[in-house]
Length: 239
Image (cartoon, rainbow, N blue to C red):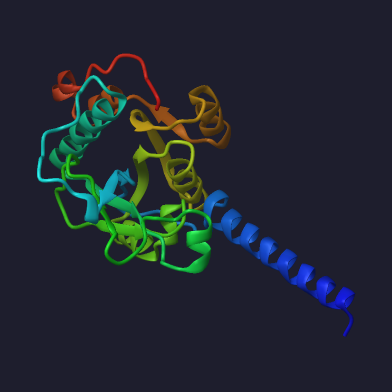
């Protein structure tokens, strides 16, 4: 075998590896999952999904003081916790979703740091945890965790409200995965954050049929008598 043939084969293998990596990243990051359509339930209900508000278990510090309410993150946390309270008081389900990559070579190539094992992320200390409905995902779309899908079906949920991170990625692709299964989907605008252009994010939501609402409207719908508890966050301020 000549040097030219060796170089050609090596280049072909490298190209194949790059294409495989691109396919993996595209599949896990920029494509919603597909699944069976949900049926018409005799007693359909709603659920709140708290998306990827997490921290590394290995980096927890001993303090528990909440983040300043003047920051975008602090305002988001306050909104999320108020929604958790309202969904709980209304007898509705709440599920927590965490992003956890498997520890493999491809994950590390594209920068995955929140991997299983010692650094497995936990729900952020400032988020109210009211149950054990904790689901880990390894893609942007939370429906990549089949246990979450079964949980929603078992509880006859046909309408989802999404809060958390990131509005342009995990929240968005989870919403798309839900729509493909027949769920009605609402993103709570003051309960999410993103570093992307917010107007473009909103346009993408509406173009795909994802409803957007402020938390005050959601809480008014759930419990009209307690709507005064809605946060006064002012204008949305993304990262």
